[in-house]
Image (cartoon, rainbow, N blue to C red):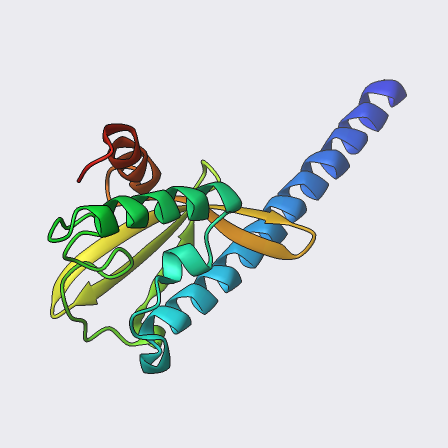
Length: 156
């Protein structure tokens, strides 16, 4: 009986520790995405691809290849007409209006309204040693997969 109680206590401690790590990881990812959106809303960074700026090495490489294809095919809209982080061609979103939610699958969901139209984007963020990067984003389809398809085809 004492062994069962001891094992139960150890199990609870381990589970609580795992939850604390998950909560800390979610907080780290949310704080990172707040920085990403602060950059996206910063007028001094207009024209900067914020997803590429904060993307993983793999995502940055794919975006670079997509951009090279766009340069080779002038007039094609490889980078899409609308903003990846805030759907639409313009925005009225303020940083304090953006909501961040940790999902059970480890992703972070960002929700807000742009000109009254609600949007949500799920982010796959990877953090290592205090540095976080965007691995992918889903609106609702995978951004990484969309860019990969362009790179595979070699055209927009």
